[in-house]
Length: 77
Image (tube, rainbow, N blue to C red; front, side):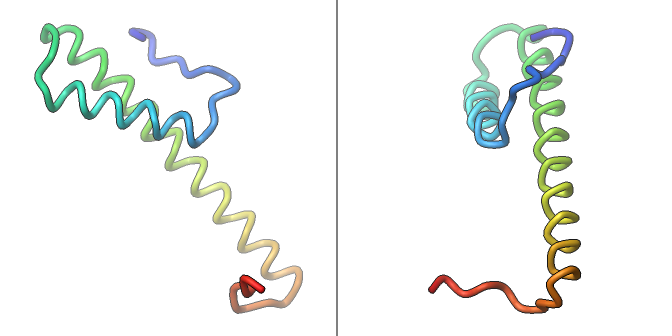
């Protein structure tokens, strides 16, 4: 993935899984410098995607909390 364009249907879970694969590969030092840089760029794009996804969900949760008046998390019951 040299253009760092992420798939339209990418999920948070799949992005995290791919990030784990990239980290493992980079930690092992496998491949050429160019390949390592491509993986690093892909990792940055995935990391940004995940952070954005989490921020969006956090904002949505805050809106929902405000709308219902709840200030405490729902119980697991």
